[in-house]
Length: 314
Image (cartoon, rainbow, N blue to C red; front, side, top):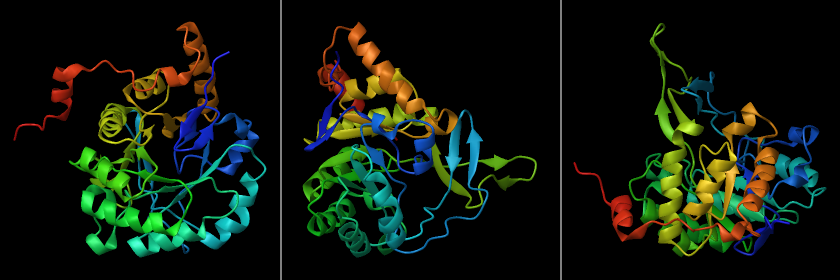
């Protein structure tokens, strides 16, 4: 028997596999047993109603996906009335993803979703901050620290800070999130990107730009997970381009304690279940009795470490 359980800042998960926010819904209960997953992560919600971005919202690029959904939401009231009760039927912990336009709005929503049935809150601080000219909270250490402090004061539930890859200060932002009160880091959200139809000469997304996800971003997300695991003392949850068992193993070796699977679920709705089964088989074949024996076992050495953290020459 292989022990797949992991501990994310006191939250016990039966295995390290969970969905990425926005790629998972209650309808998947008709496809597989949702209790197979390590955690349930909801689509990001906002306090009030939100329509989302203009269409088209999604396009395929080089085997990956570009999206500009815009976080459509029915608001916190509908979420508490309909979504949370649905997940109370499952033993798997529920993680609620939230977004806010300002630090105060974030904190208020955080308090409102801190209800029975919610095990942790994933705070999408990679979303725009209107008080900083639309720049994401997690682009800078200072704004990351400020918003996390307000969030920490708003709830006693574990806080998972979802970081952005659109920053040149990954380790510094990770440390700021930890110092501000984050219990874990989700690394990372999508990469700001663009695609143009060469025939119409128009952007392929209605909002011009969007977030790139899928296999093409995995090396970037893996690098970030490694950096954040080395820069902080809190658990890292890898996210970005994970679609195979081998991808999961890479993230765990790099230092992630768990992972989130996103775009792969759109292609194969049972991808997460297949990954869980494949991970157990791989560990058994390697003679490992626990997945925890794999976490953070990368052999880097001082020379490689210097290369990873060295800034690119101008």
